[in-house]
Image (cartoon, rainbow, N blue to C red; front, side, top):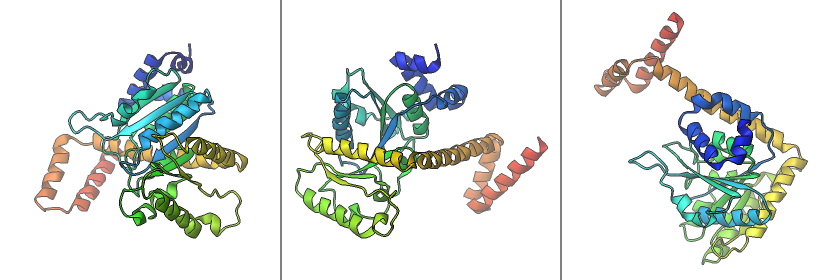
Length: 321
């Protein structure tokens, strides 16, 4: 049985393989390459936004609706890292417990492990494995993200940016940054005071500054602003229709290929940085590295000079071998 068929058929095998991908990617590189070539029509939906906006509740409500459509759904929940174990705190999985027992839903928590951008190091690999395992929708929920944490754009076909009323100054919600990553804007907890004002502020921002207002390119997408309440299950059907509309927009304008190129370029650069850093670090001993840091600590050498000298020594070492 092929690896892909095994992952389709055996949830325990899938979980074990995902753990190996997350912790020891090099040991499964050949298998990941095999899965990369496995055709998949899976749609990746990114869900991001500030802490407390109700992302997990919204993901749960959306997943229930997708299951009513008989779609298999995988959820990748990127949680904060435990300072003690280094693992995911699992807050999102606890909040999604009502999905437990559904054979058509698979939930995977990942620790951010200090990675900036709202995702974890292996999120792209994990999403790809889940797509190859037959999940027609892969929902990736980021850590509660700030305005610069927009890595999800390079991963997801459709990105939802979730806001909620009562989180502070409305101006904070419409600053450039994470909001510009939105394919769809969602005001969750839309039944709370201040929701209408937030909706109005977001719509005003789009009217004033979105590229579709200044360009004739019909391929440009105007993000809809949707009011929803995950707890009351209102606005979820409208959200699902907006996601479908965005996917059709990508397909009709040939933008899926553009998205794939951008995604692969971002993935290539991230993995290149990681591999180069690992090779550079592995080329020196702990004593040599400690010596460089000690010199910087005693202010004998400025940190950037220390880095430059370290890289010079790496180049010398590489040429000798």
